[in-house]
Amino acid sequence: KIKKGYKMAGTTKIKAKIDKNGVCEVKALASHDMLSYQEAERAKKEANFITYLVAKVGGKVVYEVSSSQFLSKDPYFKFSFTGAKAGDDIEITWKDLKGNSDTTVEKIK
Image (cartoon, rainbow, N blue to C red):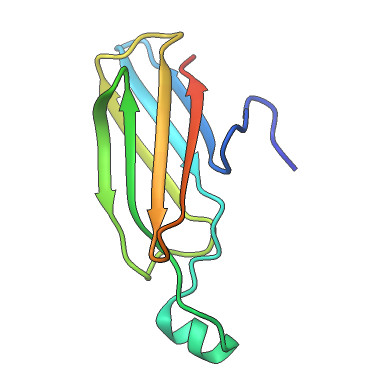
């Protein structure tokens, strides 16, 4: 179920809004099973987890992270930055261990 205010193009749910000080607060929920090597072995599946996530506004990187198998299923990312304005698009892209990727674009409020 998608909460009001979320729009999905990719599989990541994004809420981004600018506060009164001009800081853009971003909350992103990536939809991914995040199977660590240990969990994958138990489940007799292949390990697969998000290894890289990047957020861009107007082609400029505002957040970038390399991650590991130690994030939970459907990981939640929260970050803030300055320099954006309401109506700009924020684009979040992640890549996983198997080379799959997902890009979601949302308007900043």
